Length: 202
Ligand code: PCA
Image 1 (tube, protein in one colour):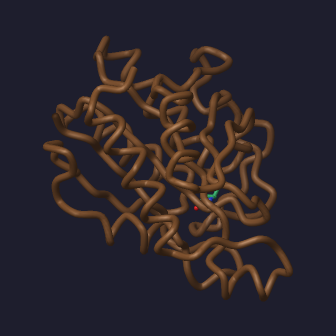
Image 2 (tube, rainbow, N blue to C red):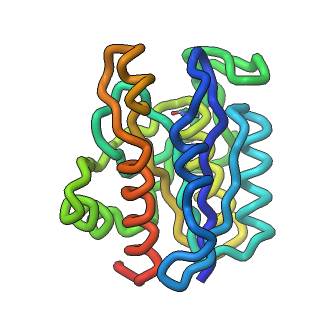
């Protein structure tokens, strides 16, 4: 089994992105699955290209994309990605799309195809705060999730895909007066989710 795992570069006013650090900290193999790591730019255009290319070319069985959701207190398992790009601030290329579709002919939305309830239960058992979220936003994270699921659908692949949002790092949380999560905890959350996926929890 081969699992694509992505994190994002820093963006906005934050010099760090916990998902870049967490993805880089993951082992190369987990529960017998090969982990293929990619760090995505926070760019509507470049992230779209990279996610679609990775899904189309790498022959992965699953894609677990991750990003920062500053302000959230728990690991968020995203249920749905919607066909819209609506930026609240420019991306790292200076692009700021408003009310644009991701793919004009694409479906309005895709549901995650990861075993969300299994992952939720596994994280709860591990004592990690977790929730199922019904919005991945309308920024680059939602776009990345949509593109992974869209590419899988367009190519008729069997791969599963979904998105996990994580809270701020503790130092970011302090600066923003928002909830945070230690990096070790975020790494443990991703590791647990990937083990469940590799173990075939359906
Ligand atoms: N979070 C942003 C984009 C990159 C990231 O880590 C988002 O939630 O869209």
